[in-house]
Image (tube, rainbow, N blue to C red; front, side, top):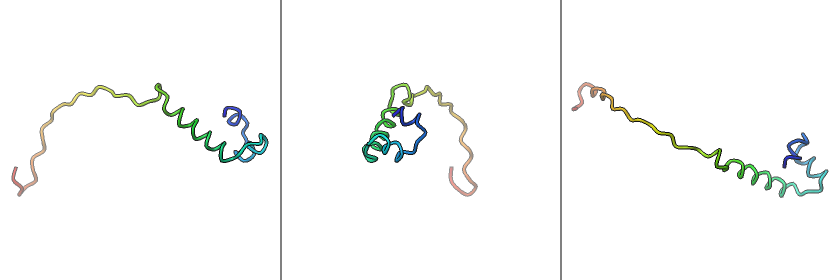
Length: 65
């Protein structure tokens, strides 16, 4: 996949030059993108938060509290 990215070619051009199937090539690109997005270093992390109480606004006029 690095060779494709460095080539600057369109997918169709790259597969034609390398004798590859466009569908298989696109599937492999998709799988590589999925693999990259699920690396542990890139996963979302939970961060500590602090919940602070605040005064509630008064109810609108004419409505019970």
